[in-house]
Length: 363
Image (cartoon, rainbow, N blue to C red):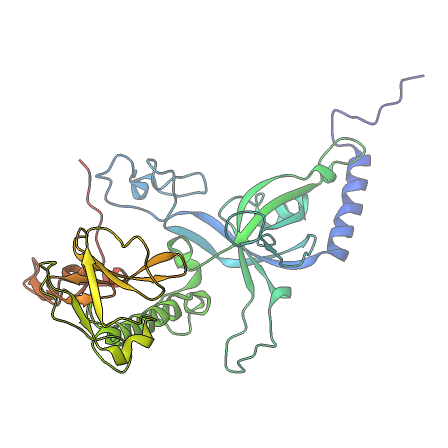
């Protein structure tokens, strides 16, 4: 009598029987997932850079081609216009924030989805691989707070793929394919899939948060220009008697004291009419005493509160007494213009979001 063995050197009827049962289980319990098949990088006709081969001369481009050999990237990707549907299963988890590390992380941002291998190959012609994009209709939120907002499906890109550990049958042949997927954004890699950014109704604009982030940044800058119109400017605390002491009569020589309006000393907690100067703090100061250190460059005004001397202002040669640092004043307050190579007049101070620098070859 031959020895009993579950392992067979070929895929026997037992394997096909098990495969049909597993396929039915995935199909019955899985969710519908739309597959945007990655076809390969876009053809590059230049060919002057050895790290970027001329894929146009190669003829047919497939998934094994690499656009940039130096960085091992496929930045310009081409996706099949045909959308494939597969059934997949994964464990749904709550989106909790992870505070165990420095910063704030979303630990449910990655999905591990399992597909039936043979069904996947029958429909796609190959197994799922890194670069494919998954569209999950069951994650569509159709109950948005804004009734005019677009309700779209969730899009994930395949990061990694391998055989599933639980997908091996009793005969030791694999039946399931497990992929790791992460959410996509409006990156260059998915431009052919998400549409033209100039089109307001494109999927790229629906997924992108760029315009909102720029609007928030511009609002912050506009508010800062109102609250702080210039770096190191004279704050109203030290120029208007309704808020704080009026500092007068100090020429920077260290010989004369700073006359303080005694009626305004309450604003800084002082009870003297003159501000003393020197190269070291007094030995026995009183609460609210003001003192100017001449050994600081620029000279610095302190107030004694509790058991510490607190900095109040610096005496800058360009702006006078101010509460903010003035080292970066000429840079921050730069309103000058310059002429570029195209003969256009542009401001020297520009926001990073508005600067576009084309990469140059390093050879």
